[in-house]
Length: 215
Image (cartoon, rainbow, N blue to C red; front, side, top):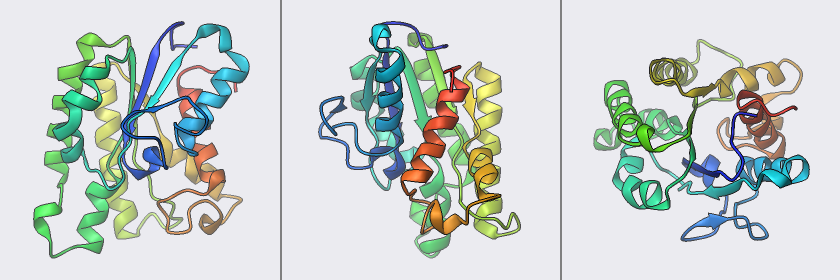
């Protein structure tokens, strides 16, 4: 597995990462990591890699965009000094362009999204042992759906930045697409964004596969 022994692994993102984690810092005490994919990743690591002593921290905040991540990066990432960092952000950057289309001040267009995410990567990468970039996703069959198309474009940005900076890329959208061949989206995420437990397990499995976990 790519994640070293005795590493601190920090997850940052929006509500999908947050998922009721403890404040101010989500750490592995009962459900303090939240009950979503971060908690599931931690559970898998505890069951099979307990001797590796990987310390998992959850710093997701609901409704965040990449703009919000940059505003809290110093306190929620740099001050916590992770060895490995996982970032999944983008769905709200896209979603606000559809559900709040007239509030343009809250829209994070793709150019700003890419520039901001890359600034954070460049700022942080020298202090990390490893970086994981997870694509945003939309649980939608129809790839011609306007929001699905835009999510795919933002996901392509994440893949490009991962390749450019030598990060591990998690194709979260592809992981959902695979399962949607057999399970209707309503069984994975009732609003096509916020996952059921099945959806969170899809994300956890995609993350673990990408870091070389034997799953």
